[in-house]
Image (tube, rainbow, N blue to C red; front, side, top):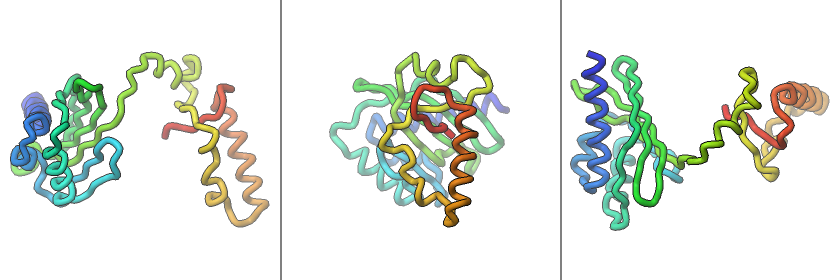
Length: 189
């Protein structure tokens, strides 16, 4: 049964991208859940919530004359009961994106509940930068630009100055134990 579900989910994932390539609004509506709780995050957009809002966004996108032909590649499925997660790369002439598509079983078929796509870093050395020289206990971190460091610090501090100083210094000490000496960093989580 799991193999059949996986095949059905991958077929729906293909149908989603076919609707996108063919600019087919009707097929796009058939692929998506008819429930009110759908959501979508197009690259660079704010999160969209609700069936009407998400479908309106697809209608706008599908009517664009410069919409590239997007093909899913390297799709993988994870099943969890009546929910399926598909992670794939979106390939088109101008580049690639990475996407997460969440499907739910609805009326004995798999329907898209959530789609999110964003930039894909093709830098093969990125994985090496995320790990602290192979130390399995190191936390994953990424570089933080100096201008963003501690930008919300004032709003996050407690009102009592002595509490703020104690909390700030102890958190700095804790963070210092996990961070390498490669410059300003922030946790990925």
